[in-house]
Length: 241
Image (cartoon, rainbow, N blue to C red; front, side, top):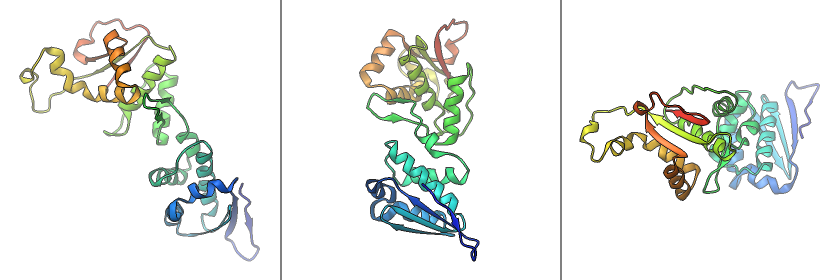
């Protein structure tokens, strides 16, 4: 795909990318060349010229930009839809010497709504790989980095593949100023707000009817950590959040 060449009078490497198919050029460059301009802004030291399905790259960092376009083409061929956030993540990963095509095309499962559940960063890919290959995995990171969500996705996949018989989702009921005793209902109703993030993740993975059926049968159990002492949990995927 890439053919580097170097002029004897210049130290700047020239790289040419031949995109396999004109039908890929529009999605690759974006509407009104929006995605192309993102690449140019991220690598201001390079010159990028497009002619037909050929992309000529010159200047410092031309080989990195060539690798970037190669990764974007691979993502398109894998069925991904390129948009500004995805291209921005791909640029960051290529700059960090990572392979976006290996990370962003790794499918965990397809949710009940038909959406593909995939890792979005190399860290998330390493996280799900660790879950898949180890009995116990510790995931540490700031809020919003996908720790619970991806763990629930891996649990649902394990259940679908019959690797486990049930899923146990548990987390401590940590008060933040409010008191459990003032909440209405029985004990499970009182702790329900603390377990809601796990319910939300579960409903992202399966449709509402399937989620209700799994919860009613006890195939998926959501419980506060205080109730887990002394339990025997065979053939279970357990998430302690």
